[in-house]
Length: 385
Image (cartoon, rainbow, N blue to C red; front, side, top):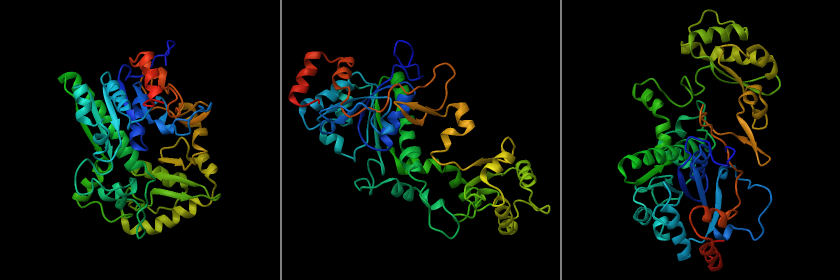
């Protein structure tokens, strides 16, 4: 924020309403808030505590926003959300298909109040199709898109990449992109629309390159390819101290430097000769095992071997490169990844720590155009807490 307390990010001036959820929808809202949008989070009234804690909420995905506690089963609570929509550029929700409509805050109701707003919907399967009404999680969505089946070592079961490919990369990040595209179009056309973001389709989009290689016949079974631990020069290896390093020496010049730096007897082999891969993997594993991770950092840091130590969540913030770049920041006493990407003129910042449900109900509603008497009445009726 600048000295006046206003956002300095590139999305300054954009207003969004977020219906509280978990995972991808809050992540999309976090990204937009990090970049300067004013995002107002609508939490369930029954989650609002009688006495507000002094420390920030533990869920970092909720950072950068204020929270209003609203009872969406109360008609005045529904009306509160629809009134907020009138001055918003968009709304984000992550309900199962049909739930928002039953609550009275679906696309038709919101676009009737504000025909220029963009209505963002985040689901796993999408708004329609045979699976649309089924429950699911990240692991299921990336299984259906083909992503999960592509990740893992040869002869072993697929390995879920935690919930990065479905919830966050294929889900929340693409919802954020969709919202921005919709808002840009609405400003040109004067008409809003619905953004249907699904984690199946988003994760499929993330693996487009691999699908292309598969169609060309140059991508085989899991764990046998260039980028999935099939190649011995693109993998992780255990060091003498039980820690790991990563190597990705794909290009010939980087491969040659890796062989020289690691002290390998490569015998003039062709790195793409797959018949040599098992033997060379064993040689490299033996070489890496002869030194600790820190010793390898001393040898390989600053080189073009395409190397990095494999760091834990506790170690990564303290690495010299991350420290120099300010990759991690402290907000409300909590260390966390900072906003990305970076902007030269309109820097993105985290304006506030994650709020507790309903922490800003009165002040935020007043800032969004409600008068104090109306807010007091909403609180009195229980529509807002």
